[in-house]
Image (cartoon, rainbow, N blue to C red; front, side):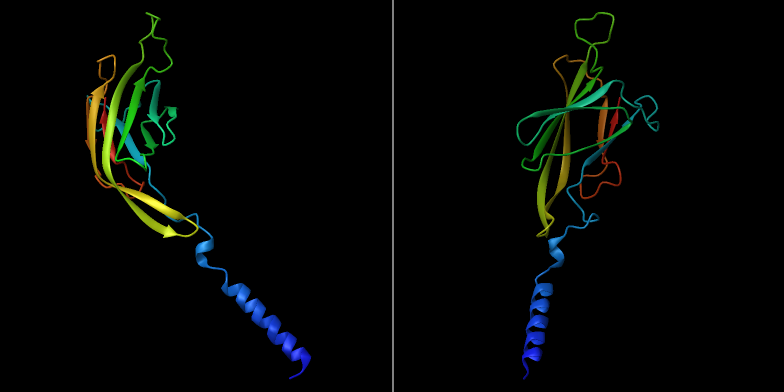
Length: 174
């Protein structure tokens, strides 16, 4: 066997080993399902088929690292994450968030607490994508906040399993 043939075979073998070392799992495709968000739609309690945006609204919750996140929303629907390390997430739903409590001319903030309990399932996706959490047996408890003046009149869970985020899972009437 000539030296050129040996070099060509060695080069070809090296290329084949290099190509076979790349796996499909090395890249996580954008279309790969991830841990879904909880989708909540708000409805008018007097007209249950009509959407109703909460006024001057924010959601506050404790994050996995112990910090508190407060996010304002201006919509009749929201998508929020559930905790992935615990079987309960507690949300403070706050109306009139920007009104100071000590101004008698403005409606003070009004907070209701929504506790969502569930069971978690970890699904291994791939080496590149890691794990995905899905939630089952969603259950809810609504409590008036410190002001004891609840603004949420009813909470209905339409989807007790949270595996996707294309449809609303919960309806809140206010």
